[in-house]
Image 1 (cartoon, chains in turn red, orange):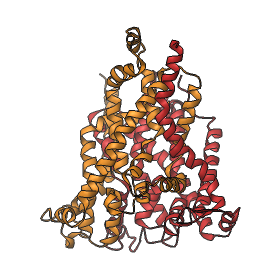
Image 2: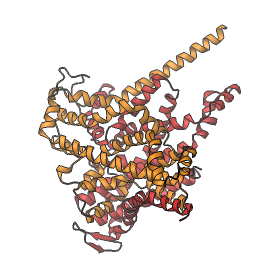
Image 3: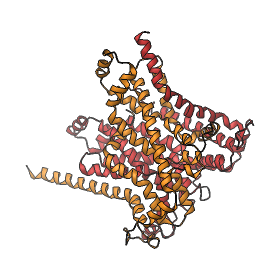
Image 4: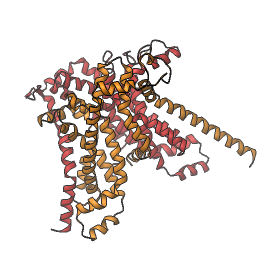
Length: 295
Length: 279
């Protein structure tokens, strides 16, 4: 056996466990997600082909449309919120010194705590009338505001908590991007008499383009799929009040695991896949693609 | 030094001071909810809704109650076991795959990498229903295997390790190749020891992610003997709806190990995230 042959076989064997694992536990469910929606699946796992029934049901289900609206609003608020807060914090603590290192750790700290615990803490803090948030609102002259109990506010509260939770992570990603901008660029700009705002527009932002793409991609996928939203909403509001925080993933979970409507849940999930694909494609087109190739 | 530059320097210092003050205020607001959790955990029920920052007479009663009356020790044990096994197996598989994708030459390598990496866009919520049906069909509902196996495979870990191996100098393994070592020997006794720093940071990140995971454990375990801590907390919260001191004590118990880990390894944790953005 030649050396090249040996290297080839070794290469395939080394990636085999991960390749099979990703194929079985990510790739296959992803494919199935697109097909189960055409079936009716009962609690015992028997499949019955029902054609477009689940999709027809979806079209006339007002809750499904409500989920789309809520998820859309959540995404539209969350993605820019994370972008600006992450970038803002990164600029605020950009200079590396002992003080800023401590600040960075404090901004990042919520990331270490699970979203379930985060949800429980915020529930306590936003208890009506006596909670610390209610006291704060009373102090600034807005008594009686219920940040989780009022249907017109609850979703904004969930977005706020998600931003608070995740901004430290995106701050670090931006700091990583800022670190790679050569200092000479700024020095040259200063010699040319550029103001701080000018060098931000003409050096920092353009040089951060790959980082920005990564941040937008990851936060978009997380927002649409509800990676953080599920834990927060499941614990805090269960989709309420008045379905104002009913994001798609919470509805999928309820349909599948509370009502055993696996087929219907899968049909909704397949719509989620389509939305995700569309959203990421739009992002790719707008930013002219990611830079996945390293070499 | 003339007086003009003295003024500007003083202005620069003032601006910097203002920025530092803003950063400090924001940072304190950021960690306030975590501080509040710990504070309430040491309070008595009558103090819960009083605005006092610190408990009047801090005591451990809430912790004792939670640890003795609710099987939290069991949930902590389950979580340590599951998160530990996932972390070790995942690092083993991902270092192998990362090494091969960065270093070994074989046909289709780039295509396989793109295929594997693209799964990072698939998040659990999207595949939860089919994954549940598959795991049920495999008979892994309410088993440790059902908790562990689907959590192992993670494109991001493979990606980060591949990046790391691409940055290693080739000479190191070439010496081993000349010595006639096989690829397994090179992986095991050259590559793995060289990967210690990145393995350490990834181990923390994987353990953290599994310790804090909720949706999958909630879906796959109905049997409370297999519950992981986050499911335990969520359930405890709905059962003891108004006993905030107990709930905060339980939350503190669950959050404390990760916060301690963070205090010890904050530099490594934050550095590894900082370098994980695509470049």
